[in-house]
Length: 262
Image (cartoon, rainbow, N blue to C red; front, side):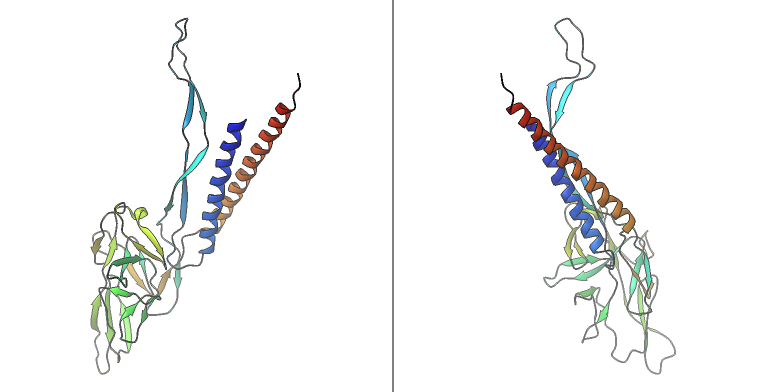
């Protein structure tokens, strides 16, 4: 019964983490480019009281053994990089990746960050930046007298200048992808950086080599499904209740055992 108290406690702790993850998913349901997290659990070590296949004194082999489990533990919270929903914005600086890939942005320390959020802005120098002010990489500078901006599916940025009848190309977006995007480290601000688990960034022009294509005037929204998250929350709540009930029942049984008289 003492073991059941600790085993059920691991279950309550695990379901609390499950609720925390669900709450974070729901909090970001309208965050552009957000990717939901999924918790992965594992069962804890077992105490083996009798090994399967062991032989009794009479020469009989046990077909099954006896292993008592110690509870549950959280292994990781995995980011699910499925495509989010599309939102039409009419803003020429809004662009989304349809398919595989990340926009590259230059962080203040000179390192490279990666994001799916394409709500770009123009800073005072005419450079294309993220809403947080990080430069898009490769850098694209919009002329001050530009009249109209367009972005092709393969990432070419073009503008009309006064007096011109044809567009002028001002830059080319390159996007990156990873062999294991779930291994990326989330920094907040819709940014990720590569790790040893994600592998090195593979860079290409959009729409080529299996990379996603770009869609101007659209933003990719969160891939969180509210109904799925609500179901997950209810399931976690019920599991939490049952674990707490197991602790309560074990405590009551201990009280009964302690109250026995000879």
